[in-house]
Length: 625
Image 1 (tube, rainbow, N blue to C red):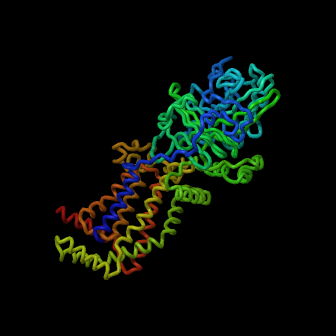
Image 2 (spheres, rainbow, N blue to C red):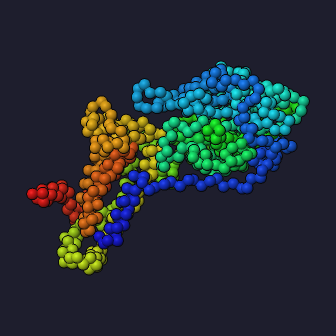
Image 3 (cartoon, helix red, strand yellow):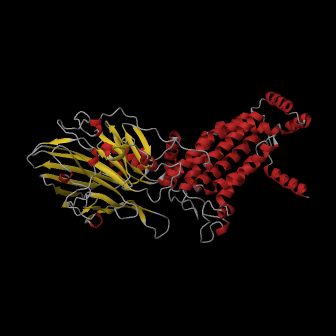
């Protein structure tokens, strides 16, 4: 193998090492949503021409009043009465202070695998460890003040319903001092989608203008923020087919927008869009009616250290006696691929998946599957996960599904592997001739390269063909790592024995006799964790080492040393990675070893792997003596 091709192979291998060890890889931010220049009145929802749903004659609004605190009859939000939320999958409550959804737990998910672990909390009230809630209201316009519309601490009354559940809606009401009658109806399906209908009736004597809005507010960064480059956590929004991501640091760095009352970025959505916050496995999204325009606002309030995602609908003008109703949706729950995909796709799928109680006329949610962070290689991560999910459903075990996926990938790449292994087999048979050339040319490297190139040409061998599988393997490896790390379906997915969470590192080591003793392993990243390597990384190192024994040894001693150490370097590097990824890599190496061995035998090469291993140990013992 000439120096150029050896260097190419080495560069590819080291590129993979760079990717998996995260040393120099920095994920660039997603492109910002491109919007046309917005006139000042558009950002204030001022003109009836700005949004298709606006009522003619609507007057300008001050958007900074969105979500403002009610100035009359304040209540203590933490002590306000509540209405229970109870479904098979959700539990929590709605606070009558502001009529906010601020207490929500996922009945199907626990924070850990411990038997007494708490259920996962998605939303939390003010005063909890991680305040995070959904708030709705109306921004006042012409003829109104903040006191005339319900605010964030307005005390609502229950008009109908006792507990919010599937097929059990809840209706709240409040009447303002100027005669505006407000109602708010909540309903929820059997998954994680809330429907919120806000209505207002003008029972006064004067015309007024106002605009409905929805807010997701998060006080401070989440406690369990991971800050991994491979995972987006923070604000995510889609506007007319373009998805934008903002981390919490990006929100803090926004320019001050006086019209929005703080650091904010406002975007006009012409037809389809949504906005909210995404965590590792959970999310909350405001979804206005698809097909209608609205204003999308990403905001950071420095004074209260509050991050907000706002959806402000069109301004409406109400004459005396008129009423107005708007319906929006709130997704607050787990990022389950099937559930999200059903909401995004054909509305009829909802009824097929979840029963007749789902309205088959529900509009689809544009690009909703993008709430899962598929990353750069989305063209690979999406189909890889879809196949993995299907295999898991067929087999019933995610570990075996990963192995089956590996078999499928290797089957697809088999023609490329055949070409590569045939070339390696020929290279292996040329080893004696190559050694003779090295001895004959001595230190004259140029002459050695020339004679080796002539040998390759004579035997019709292409040394670079052995690099092709590695070139293809790098994006597949990274895509699978992305899938295993970000998708909820891998969380707490069991394999067998001690491997009860394939999204976590190998829980075994010599410290607990590889899972036989009932205690954990040293903390990931510590010196002890490196010393007490798990059984999966150990098998990975051995499988890489065996595979190397089938390949022709590099002519250059330095490169030979690097390749000799590479299996053990990877063993320690991947020891702290998700065990599902290590399972894939072991399966991949094992299949590759088998394919290569059989193909080399079919080409006349007779690889004696174990004989080579014994010879290596024998030479080492002789050198020691």
